Length: 240
Image (cartoon, rainbow, N blue to C red; front, side, top):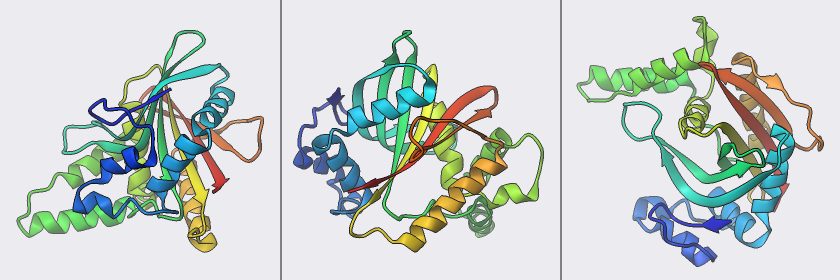
């Protein structure tokens, strides 16, 4: 599997990977024992690509091979501004020739951000103050994508999970999978991690995801349908 940046330059070391975070704003994400650094270490030094390949093969019931992996890979999923930036995008094929896209969301104990309600209210307030923002329209579109019927509880799901799922499907592969991998580093906080997992499970319940039976009980798998498209979701902890 080739690892490259968004411009196609090869990545073969942690120093190469760190080069993606070269601006003052992005540099704050490159810290040892935090998510960006952890996924880089996992892939480069701990055979993470093969590990993920085995998990994905089990979930979808087909053998897979990855051709390339791209950190910080953006996928446009609507017409409102920037797209979903995957911590790591993995592109490949199954043994039956179907295309595969895996969007990896790396966590230590970082939360899934605001609720849809909180993000929507804050954006509406900015609009009222004269600021130009399309976040309310984006959230409305995402909620329509995820919920067939209007339900006040849908605003309580985490906004990041709404666009993470949408941004995985929007890559346009035959098979799409969102893989949330939580790295238990020395900076991992059990309380925060448990809260994040509750948010994730609550989201899956609200969007009527179906639980998968997997070979390893350490992995939690689900499948959901969004506007006629199927999305596999995996969640797993990894001691690092």
